Amino acid sequence: MAPNADQYDAMIILKLYELRRDAELRKARDWAAAELWPASYEQLQSTLAPGSDANRYFRQVFGYWEMAAALAVHGAVDKDLFIECEGEMFFVYAKIRPLLADFRKYNPDFMQSVETLLEHSPAAQKKLELAEKRVALFRERLAHVKK
Image (cartoon, rainbow, N blue to C red; front, side, top):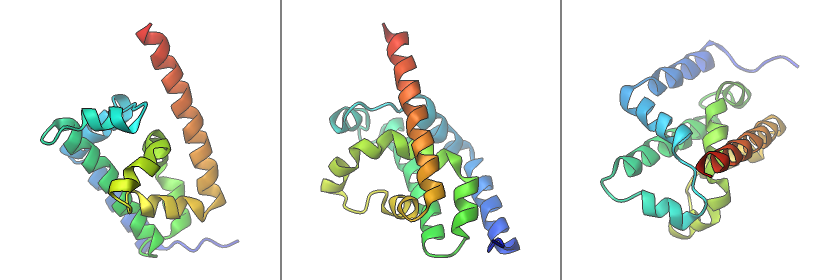
């Protein structure tokens, strides 16, 4: 099967990568990767106090990935290329996926573009499964460290 992506898709992917290098977004991404391990929606909400760094970081990371996924969902960038290039999105999404129903009681559209993108691609579903396994492994390791 011939690829559908062209040089414009590549430019968008590279621009998304460049945006991820912004100093504040990098701090937020580091926080989401290393410190965001909610066991429940309530626990997460207790760490996201208005005005806190955690609140700002959460909104930056999840807003960024929702915006980026929307570009693929709406055809602004080739979906297959986007899925292949954006591994971090799967990892952070896997961390909060069990909490989506609770989020959507208050914000029905929360991570809707990411979910739509993942549901319509077997490759994305496979990457999400792998990310969920990695998240579970990291949670297990963290539990042992805390003992």
